[in-house]
Structures are given as C-alpha cells and as structure tokens.
Length: 228
Image (cartoon, rainbow, N blue to C red; front, side, top):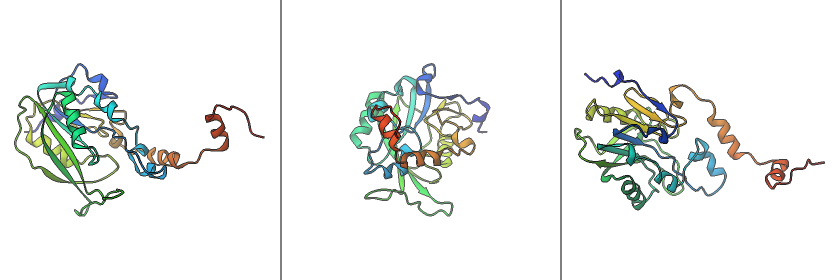
C-alpha cells in the first residue's frame, strides 16, 4: 500500500535551508530568465509570474549538497536552454546524464495544448534526468501526457508517475515547487501557491505593462523634486 502521506511534509522558502537534508529524488524547476523582444512580451513571460534567475545563479544552487549517495534528479528545462548548459549544470552538481523525458501538454479535452513562442509554438516541456550512484526504480516512459494549467504549474501526472515507480522510502523534494504534495518536501517562496487561489498574478502582469509616470521617471533619475 502506498503510504507516502504518512510522513510529514516540510515546507521551506529557500534551497539554502536544505543543508541538513539528503534526498533520493530531487525535482527542480529553475526560474529560467528569458530575454523577450519587448517589454510587452514580459507580460507573457516567467517574469510576470515570479522572480527569475540568471544561469549563473541557478548554477550556484546547492543541488549536489542535498543529494544522497543514490539520487535521481528531474530538472525541468526550456528548449532554448542548450544541451551544453544542461550538461554544465549536471556536472556542477555531480550528476551524470541519464535521459530526457517529455511532458506532452494537453487540454481538459485531451487535445494538444498550444503554448507561446516567437518561431515555434510550444506543445511540450522537457525534463533532464541525471543520477548519482544507482537509484532504484521501475522503468517508466520517456513521454507522458499531462494537463497544462497555470503558468509553471507542473502536472499531477508527473508526480504520480514518480511515486508509482520509486520505492516508498525514498525521500523526495520539489525545489521551486508551487504546490505542496503528500510525501514531498517543497521549497520556494511560492511553494504552496496552488494549494489555494491566489489573486496576485494579474496585478503583477499589469505592473510590468504599466508605463512610468513623469514623477517616477524623475525619481528614478535621482532628481527628487515635485513637478509644478
């Protein structure tokens, strides 16, 4: 009988708070920084949803430090993250590359969910898989279908696949998660965002699109004076 829910879930704000833990399964959804063509494009980017990180900042995450001697890493990436960059992160954290699995995004009707893109409309999201040691698990598919919902919200089907194919006693952590789950420790300043409705996203998008007032422009330039 699957019993992960019997263990209390730990909710933390930052990966730096994980230094006392060691995990067999690490899920990682980095806040990739993407350069848009214009300010208007930011309203559809990750920056409209949460604070993003440079590649160098992602590289400094203590992923290797929290890995057990038998550990598997599932790192969500964007297709514009090059193979060299993906491998550089694995090397930095001490993982060897195993494979890449694909989340095929679907609608509630089971059809392909079309995303955004300048040249290609995204229909999927890759997950780079790396390992330390020889973590035990059943073989699982290299592609799975899962419902696409809010921006950056990962599909329940992914977590079900992991939980069904790995030993119950393996300790799990989801870094930069946006929803808590039984049996998974979760990390991030929005780690429980989708546990309940959140109304702040629209205001964040509106702020990115908002043109600065003349007073704000003057203050930004360091000229703190009132206009006539």
